[in-house]
Image (cartoon, rainbow, N blue to C red):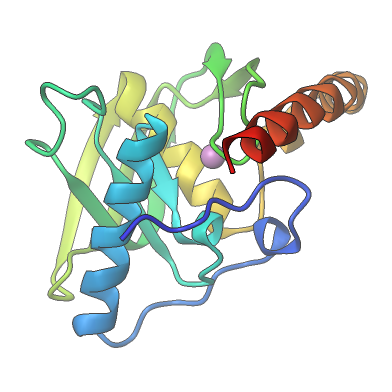
Length: 177
Ligand code: NI
């Protein structure tokens, strides 16, 4: 089921998500819904905060485009960055700030420890888009958005721009009803 994406400045986006302790049906449903919601919007990653659920759950599929989507679904429950190296600046966007893209500095390499849907621990080493997506989504679980990674001036300018984008976005959504 596609869930509603929470848009900035929704409070839930600023809150820290809680650790998942039970690996049951509820989490499996949440993950399934998060993939469906992410594909509908054409994103490559989604954190549970973004659908209004304060649980430490992240889904990523780097092939969110129609043809390849679903073949490489990645689920990270209670993810933690345990190692990071290097630095890379690249443009980033977020489904909770639709239409806004800004260059953000991130680590070039990360090692992430997480649990799968059964609660089993695993580790992944990532570079490139996956490293960026992991850092962006783990930030969400801690109530941090990519605009919070900009300088105060850059953040202010980005938010001014987003206000205008949001008005447009809301008009578009309203006209679809
Ligand atoms: Ni995001």
